Image 1: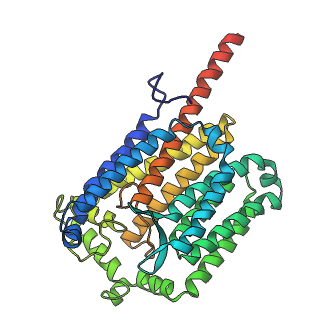
Image 2: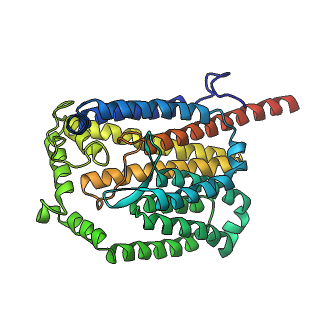
Image 3: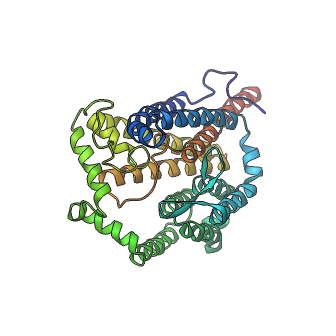
Length: 384
């Protein structure tokens, strides 16, 4: 088991690692600011939620470090275990899951609740990357290669809808479709499938009353500002109060029991209120840099014929970027309300731990790609 912590100073992508650590620090600060009143009311300790988040960050960094020492070949070898593990979690949560706010998404583990969809998304992406490597020619030339992974995605989609977790379904399908497209699937096949998926998503919205209510409140939240549009209007008020430079750390009014889920799904709104447009754009820039860097790592690995490395990197970048942008879109009123955390920033153990694990794998992928370059250079020098 080779370690990226030793050897050349360029073995690690320090810019990516720095951006991830930066978001973790920002997350701790914002969770602390947004949760003090809630924690004081619920637990008689204003630092209760901050302490738990700090423990999650510590555990996440440990997982990231461990994952950075696991060879990517090992991950590829056990990709089938990853698939059954992901689907298994989605099944288990339906049997023993804990219901919160009308959804059964969490498996109680005593010390924290594991959100099954967070782990399942990464597990399914890892399996899909291995499938694309094995069936690459078939994916690029035949409908069968394109449709086979749809069976797996269809099963996972049904399980996610049974919770229900529509937001996780959108993120998983978006990342999976992106991976298949980047692997070289024919454009016309991709367009047909996207049209079918869009039709399916529209049907899910139209035939589910609570989703239609969310869509209606999204179209005109102020028409029902104290009903279905309440959360979005309070979020928009937070953005309005923040203006360019914000009210200052800790000075948000919306977190004082006006904005629901202020330290989880709507932490970005509190950040915008306290740090203004400048702070919101700075965080958005970090998020976009991480997503772009993941895609760049994937492209560089693919050009070196490290296909599994590349496809997993694409998947991680798409999962992270799409979930972050959907969360920000919901906070700003650009998208209908969904229960999605802001990766690395929102309070919650499942999202934070799985994202740290994913970025540990991503850093390992880039480390092995760099080592491959070094070994190739040595061989070329020896041959000459």
